[in-house]
Every structure is written in C-alpha cells, then in structure tokens.
Image (cartoon, rainbow, N blue to C red; front, side):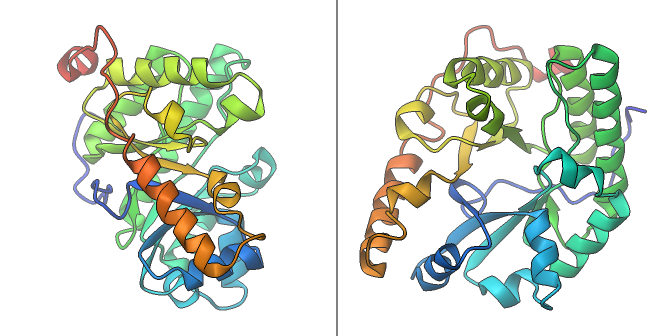
Length: 274
C-alpha cells in the first residue's frame, strides 16, 4: 500500500504568506461573512466541506462568494457523521466545482481509544483516499493531515507525503481542547511529530493563543481556529474596531509562529524514512 515511487500528478501545497500565519475558521453566518467581505486587506479562511455544499447549492464558487482577496482553504475535518456520508468521489466533485485555493483532504477518524487494528485501517484508508484524490484535483493544492497515534502509524503518512512531495501538513489539534486534554499533551504530540519528521511545516488547527503558540516548535507556521471571533468582539464592535482588533491579533499571533525551540532529540528525516 505505501508507495516508494514519486507521484508526478500530485499537487501539494507549498508554504507561502497566503497559507500561513493567522487563519480564520469561518462559518456560514452573516457576521462572519460581513467581516470577511468588509476587511480591507488579504484574509485566509478555512471552510468546512459541509458549508461548501451549501454554497454550491446557491451556484457559488470560492471566488464568486468570497472574492479574489480571500484565500480559501476547504477541509474535511468535520464530524464523523458528515464523514460517513462523504465518499472520495463526492469530495472530488465538491472541490472541483467550488475550486478553493487549498484543500485538506480525505479525513478519517483516528482515535487513541480505538484498538490498534481499527486505527491502522483508518490510517490506511485515509492514505488511499489521499493518493486517489491527489491527481484528480490538479487546480487545487492539497495540504494533507498527519494521522496516527503511534510512530508506526505516522510513518505510513510520512512515506506517502514524501512520495507526493508534500512538505506542508495539517495537525488537527481541536480535539485536545474539546475533550479537555488541554495544551500539554497537544504540545507533546506536536513535538513528537517534529522529532520524527523535522522537515515538515505544520498548519495547526484549534489553537490561536499567542501565549501557547510561542511554546511550540518553529515548524508550526499557521494557526487556524475560532478565537478571532471573541478577540475582535465580532458582534459587539463597529466594523472599523473589528478591523483594528483583527490587525492587532494577527500581529500578536504571527509574531509567535515559527519562533519556538526545537524539541530535544530531533531525529533526521533519513533516520525516520529509512
């Protein structure tokens, strides 16, 4: 299953200023859309794939709805119920029609509480989906997810990333806070990934606190989440005040990204991939 050859038909995302830094997890809500439409600078947003379907039902693409100054990243990191109904073919069709700038593809649920066999099956299914989808979305750059609770499970991902030429990946951290595990195990797991594969750049979902971001390794270069809603007091301040508060938040978050210390005992890529 795990390929050793390269995949020239793939289209992995390369790190740049539009897909890094502070990134807004946006909902289909009027207040969100009014802020995005009215902000005078460049924005990058993440949109869940169930919202993609809603916009397509109204004949919108990413650019027709959000405009040319908004970088749109779609994601399959949605509820297990939504994932259960999302086939690879349906995902391909939705993303081809919506045409975002980037896409986080083919998520499968992988939980530490699952038995090892179930986790391995889901990691394998995720990687098969990634390999199937990659050559079929040539206009959309892909940012794959790091999946797996053990080094062996993650190693399967790293080998596929290497075959696709993918050096920019997503670490999904939202569940560390929704399950009340908190920041410490999140940091430990990110440091483990960095120790195993230090050449990867990481987009982190679920954390936008500058105080905590500064404690993460420098490979974390993007922060996706909903903290921005409270920070800019979205529904309580004027448009001008929202924009000013957002600019301050952006500066504070981005000053901490890519600045942390490398974890001790970082392995080289060749040691992991051998």
